[in-house]
Image (cartoon, rainbow, N blue to C red; front, side):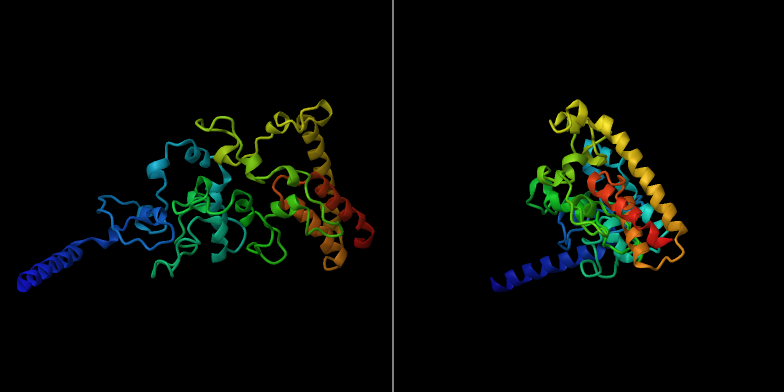
Length: 313
């Protein structure tokens, strides 16, 4: 009896070894990585006849295989996030591998530690800022988010990344919204900080119908400013955003031009006054809404820069 069981066990073992020997390990299915989060996948997919370069790499997302026809995925194609990797690689700055942590989905998930021999870098990265930047099937949070909504966007939309180079402000949305880090101005949080519990997504992802493909809001991440009046905050005639926004933009643009002209003409570009004026100018510029995330703070920063004109001459 024991000999029969031993013979059966050896037969099964040899059969398993034979199957693995015949299996094509190059057909590893990268989507398994996304499904299982950071876990090392142990299953292999069936060989494909005509794999594209994107499907041959373990780094490629496979979300489109299930979600390509969904509004969220179609909206994402309209978003700047879908061009984040191309913008990095073709941009004016020297590309550092660390830049991928914000410019490419997969930087945190895939690494040489997780998948030995396949280092994630600028040459191997294939994803833009895509689904797995924000979502994971392993998450137990609402919408399968990898972080709470109020903390997610500011992971990258802040000015201390240093990717663009020392002293170059790449993004400043977080600092502008919270009203901090500028020169010569006390902390001045946006009035929206108190009322926007979900922070960024409250404006940038709001849309009326979740089943339709939106032009603003949703996964386009383009702020839908029409909600400002319907939310009961800017619905009065003297507080209408449709009237105030053009006036505000004209005011900010005029001050930005004045500060830039002052900086360009400054003979000493190493003085503290110059550095302070430039910091404030670059913070407002680095906030892609030209200070729209905190209008009072943007005006205060530029006003302080203009007040330094005599020290720059």
